[in-house]
Image (cartoon, rainbow, N blue to C red):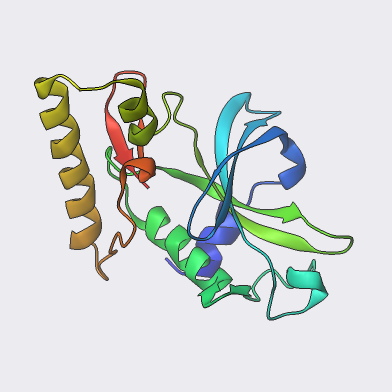
Length: 181
């Protein structure tokens, strides 16, 4: 599946993402929690940081969505590549991509964002901050699930390397199962 086909097939209208609240930041940009007003579900939006090689005050101009953004060596092309890889396969231990959106930026500009499922329990990092020690069975299960998710990505062709695997990038569902992303 080409990047472009995946992106167009899964394009989510940014206007349908309401109640946006910043919940963190990552290597590419800011992470927001939002609610889709038609689907009535919570979503996480990973939005690319700042200046663009395309001008327009650091963002992509409407109508030029296939152009790339670049930020300190990171690019919109890399983010689209991540979206393509997330579209090609799925694993219960890897965050699921719901689509891509173009979020409003300064007047006449938009920023690229990945829209993923929102995991209510938050990150493993947050859990570790709350509890001084996890029970051993839970510790082993979480470690095993991280390994399964990481192995799935490494076995992908081409391999996806998790260069920033850390507790803040491991999300927990309501049953304390984890997903890397």
